[in-house]
Image (cartoon, rainbow, N blue to C red):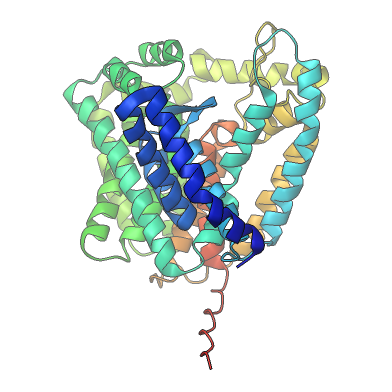
Length: 467
């Protein structure tokens, strides 16, 4: 054991006594109890950081934007990631964890993180007249990216990845149960507003506006229907390919999330998610993946039934063929026509002080994953993001014969398929670029696909017998 770890252990009882005494003096018994619970959680994650990642996998899909104040206001999902990294740092100090994975994808991500310091500084100096804490937003962005590094570090073995997938599917199941319960009871998105208020969601006025403008589309803890579709675009392929290779409750839950998630995509009215999911199923059927053909047929029948029985879905689908007559499509055309003005005004990006479009200007946003990187972090960031995805694809593209599906390759196919569908939506939407928590699930899915594609590490050497 290192000298630093030994010294920390000697001081820990004294620090704990001072902390609990101060809590009791300042807030009495209730605050003391809450402090004890917080300390127990902290100690649990410090002892085993994987517990923090597992908690994130449950909370992030279920209640992604529930907030907590820890000096700054942040989501519980991000707080769990920060706590997990604290546990990782402690375990590194104790010499119990290997160094970070340094594959081609991780190295490319490192360059993207390094470049982000430039637009961070430039944005703080050039974006005026708006409130925003650029350094804090940058740290939160790093926490969301960090799932790419946490997965290989904390789940090197199949049994650990199985625990992670169990928690992830449970989180998606809880989100779908809550969303479909309220939607089937009252198909009015505004009924979700009090629920999210009780969960300490920030910006209640924005939630009110979103649900009021799209009240016929299924509400969910992801608030915006397109964000709901994006989350399910990741969750449905993962649940299906994980479930088909499992038995018992894992298989039943995976299939339930697959069916409920497909219905959720239709009810949310996310056209991009619906089209990209259909494209994914067609690609899987072409590659002769087991069950893909039947899924395509059954999904087509169910989608047709839902479209006939649910008029708002009909309207959303028909709007695809209305071109500039559709409001959201018209806005996208305006965004592309005006994008060059934003690049000319902010050649190195907006930075992290504010999200596009900057308030107080006549600029538009941009509904494109790659161009949004350029808008926020400059053209070099967009090129570096492309480098990350190219490095990822080179590592995962050898999927083999999809007709022979087993426990070794099923999750690999599901995670790669989910990533391809997510990248396909990037041509018409931007939510996988900088949307908090959804971004973390995006990189988590990429990390799963990388872990499933790389060879297993050698088993740990048995301890040497003491003389």
